[in-house]
Image (cartoon, rainbow, N blue to C red; front, side, top):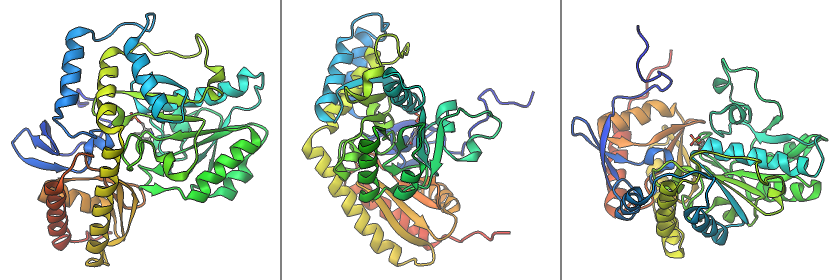
Length: 396
Ligand SMILES: *Cc1c(COP(=O)(O)O)cnc(C)c1O
């Protein structure tokens, strides 16, 4: 037998964390890493946040799981919290991002089919998007590396270039149900959509009675200095998928919708055994307690600006390595002129700085939102040292 007990789908690196302390991870051999990856934009509050731990501990001792056959005071409270703080009127809780996007896709289709229109089922999606790894969510992305071995894909997705409003408009046809878009592409390379694009999609959706579905799984929950990234664009979606940061490290996602958009999601339309369990609700509530206030959001925006301007200064010293800085708040990307992966490995293995590689030769800088000045300085020390002695690998 050569297959490993853990199904070998991840190319895992040699870092093997066993403990977390605020913005650092400690490996099984005791090595300390500065964590500017946050479990890929998940650990908003760092790794040992007393409020989050306390909430999970208390809830675990009280009640961990019941069925959605029963009433849910915990779910009602967190849903109300999200409704009060967003465009949404109603919330479906999931356990992951892909499930949240699945629920969003179903909600968008059901919007039309509930009204008796079974011809409109297609979502226009955008190249280099990432929406998750279920059949529907890989089908929603044009990225062939995720399709290989899994055909046939699910029907009902049409790909258009990201940030191309004219392309999106031209793609609208008799089967179009809506648009599914990340306001800031994460895996695709921290690429924020332009204001014109997001506002244009909203206008097209209004004009053609389409659903504007946002995938804010990575950019949502205070990451950009707003609770949700759509707020930067002066528009509101009909449906939104959120996950990653919303549980602060506890598996939790949600599909948010307006009352109108959710008209097809009545009794029996959807479900999840674990979705919205009391333990997840406790974690989500603790995260909202920490982040859903003006003061916290302003701090994220301020720290993001500070890191961004220092990054911009820094890349000026290495014009051969770096092209530009992009993103919003603490969702930043360093676009490189060379392949970004070797540099990411160099920072990790020589300087114990964890970042995340992304598409378009971009290095993701996505620290816990609770970083302080000391961690920001440590980041720049490691980054500067790493850039100074980085040798661009020869390409064959
Ligand atoms: C991570 C991610 C997902 C998938 O979330 P999972 O929890 O891994 O299923 C979907 N959309 C975006 C934008 C993501 O970044």
